[in-house]
Image 1 (cartoon, rainbow, N blue to C red):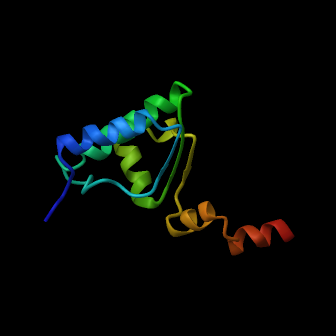
Image 2 (image 1 turned 60 degrees about the vertical axis):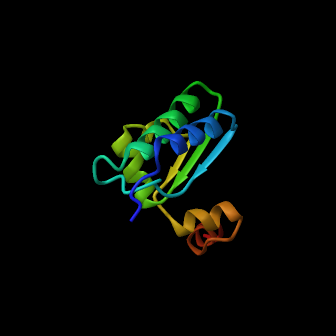
Length: 107
């Protein structure tokens, strides 16, 4: 059973984040709820947050586990946009019409 990614993979993820202009995040990188398996998720979240705060990155995150991971990393307020919806968040990102939003737009 794999519970987290290793240090070399974390370094590759951090490098990819550093060269990005936008990050869309849905889901943690490992079993972040159990120490020490949140190392990669916390490192990536903090890198995204640092770059977002500095204005070098737009960051969008969604899903309940993602929200919990960002809270654990202490960076929830540093992302550009965070949604608690998981599947609905992905559908919204795809441009699909969400029934609740459509009802509000009509009302």
